[in-house]
Length: 446
Image (tube, rainbow, N blue to C red):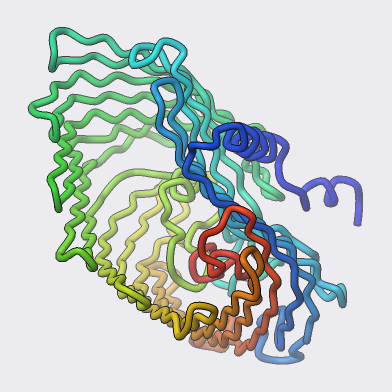
């Protein structure tokens, strides 16, 4: 393994710095809502390359870390979530890798409520070949770092004007898609009440690729937004238009989004979201388009695309039982690389039950169906998983995870069956659920 390849096997420097700084800041704030933990363990895969012939078994060494930090003060607004694992493939059949998600932002109030500075970072995986199963050989890490100032002026008690500027750096592990993004925007709005806000928003962004100047593009958004938050219902809406300037010509389309969250009862809630917008691989990762399914939701490409999506989720949590049922639909249409155009349906369900104060069991099932329009290719992937967690001390937990994944497609392209097993010892000095410390859930972290 060469020096260049070895460098990419570690977290990008900017991502590492952001999360370390966040953790250090959190450690200094004893009143912050903070949970973190470490895990170490071992795993086994019956088919690490995910092929239908010449299956290769693999032994896996695992080190994992998770962090959840929420902070709200007059001078600091922070929301950081990290859930990552390092997989050391001990039989050397594939390259070892970082795997998981890390998302966070820190807003510093240099002049509280008037002049603030944002630091934001998103780290995750994208798929280099969307027609193949997601493996360590077909996916790569992507890091998206953003920083910039916000200036807010208020006129009276309800009217405000906000202007902001942003610089972003996008780093891919292997693909020649590294880019710099420079942009800015404004919002002119009015607080209709304590729980609702209406605004006119404008955003301009210039995206320049380090190695692919012919793929550079500019994007402008102009839209109205309306947010309302009630005692049991939250609604966020956007309606406007996007202009996209490419080397090959200009295009554009509607920007529309609505998200409704409703607390049906003290123990259950429903989330409905509908959206259409022009986006790209980096923004799709940051927006959470990789939340459910078997892998490869985001394709590593410089080409922007129009994404139309819908999602519905129901959550129930009471006493010792938690249930989640969800479904999502995505339709991606690329501007130039129409071979990647696809429709994706995903269904998921999970059940967690505390059978005793020290023992918890969980079941998860995820079905993903994909259809590529131009390539006339379809694939279906199904994952079942079982978790057993035993709290063996105030700060220690032992988790056993078993899962089975199968994929079917015409012509046997990318078909496979794989069984995995993990045994992980978790250490959580700040309390919280040991469930978070199982090796990064591929169903959530693709």
